[in-house]
Length: 243
Image (cartoon, rainbow, N blue to C red; front, side, top):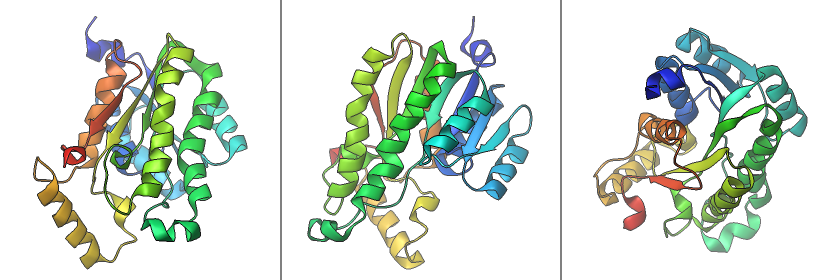
């Protein structure tokens, strides 16, 4: 059986699927005939995403930081073959001297806590031959000044991948670790500062460009499709971690 025909038989839930990397992943999957259920907090954005995907795609409102909302999401989604979690919350960036006044607890709640809760609550309806793919961030594998908080948040999530892969086997558990990806995550920065940061990172990255959501989506779908990959954190950063 070909990979494409196998994928057409699957139902993938994408938490954080209405924008950015999550939406790019859902779009790639839908284009391969996969049934996709998107989870997101913003109803308008969710409806727009589902409309663009068409076909069998559907959207369910969910706040991934709310356990009750997550329970409802998985109950309404029904049986799924794969789970992709892309949700995050801004926070944790900045110089080490300012971390005492940074909402580190909120950053952990919005990333590793939300992801691990989603994993736990997906299990009753996740196929025995299914997979879980988490999206972390390259800060966990790099050594960039001003990212100690981000590295701690994402490193905590990456540390969970291997024990989860063993505990939940034969289900597969992996993570994809993006580098600098030009998405709306950066929109809170003033435009000039954002552009300058993008230019700086592009020059530093060995492939001489920043990433796009489609780059990360392709990596997510690659580990989702390959039934012989588990317990892996796959960098998708253009080599930025090497610099």
